[in-house]
Length: 504
Image 1 (cartoon, rainbow, N blue to C red):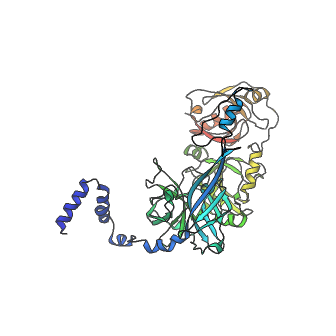
Image 2 (spheres, rainbow, N blue to C red):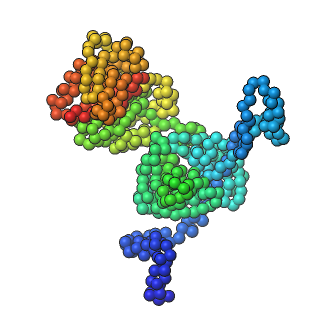
């Protein structure tokens, strides 16, 4: 075909509605260097051929009990002693094949991959096998093996299965280092979308460190490699054939791929898989603090040059730092040598640390940076402890202050916390401070979500016990030229949080 006839064909393609294809064929190469273009995967056939045997289809079934099946007519509710009771019992309950409780078998499909051929270890998503009565692993050559559940982790959505390695010759794949992946690197997904096993798709790393609010350790790899229903639990490979992610979620209004998929990075998944294999459960490090983000206003109130780190809003009673090592109001900016730039960084780096490990934690306390040594507890034990305590830090209630009048400040009316106000707002006995009795509509306090019944325990990291203390602290901050007041508030049950309020 001559160049002119080729261009005429291209114009016909454009007018037929394939503009995106034409742009991809002609515009993109002109924007990249010849070297970069040559590095692209001309074919992934050899890579895929060596990996397909290690990727499996996960089939689960669950028997759901109930009195109504699909399309069943519900039994009418009859008055007690109705003469029609026997008739309806015969019609609705005693039909052939439906003696006793009726149930139906629900099946689901997903993906997984073999990581240990000798032991028969298969990795998938927790949500693929959750609540399953039976789990089967289907291999690319048609062989099916029963699987047993080794362990699951709901926080990262990872599950480990085991099949009999003698029942089939297994092929395993290795985990790679997801931290080395860059935006734009080529990746390949293999899985079982819509029950179509052995499906291979190729794309790039679109973004890293994505937080999609699915769990406490969100740090997903985003990819445009096509991921659909049934791909869950399948591997995301780098160009060396190493697993750098476990495909787990998509964004899709229609239920199909629109080029936005998410994978659990291998850096996070590998430790979870190892713990599940060894213990059948996770054993994560635990610091024993409640945290919240450091906003620009909070950073300014704490005298920090930039908003970074995790603000400690409370300390768990009986936890690793309940000895005063870390206090409410501290800002954690580094943990065990790793920077904590955002609040969400801290739970992940702590959880990846070993239980019982002694680590250095860098904090900012009242504007001064210092390092403290902390020995980590176990998160799973800490969750039980946290659920059984009231969430407040130990505070010295001291003697009750004499009765004083209420005061109005920053859109709030505050008063003495005594027996009367405790009863009125249902405030726990161990909570101390100054109670907020009213919040003015459209005020600075209302904008911050402050509500009547909350208790001011500290202002600018100094405790307050009376309405006069509140007024004095606000006045002092204004004299210092501060624009915001940092309040530590306690809920009715004692859970703490920090709020900044404008003072202009």
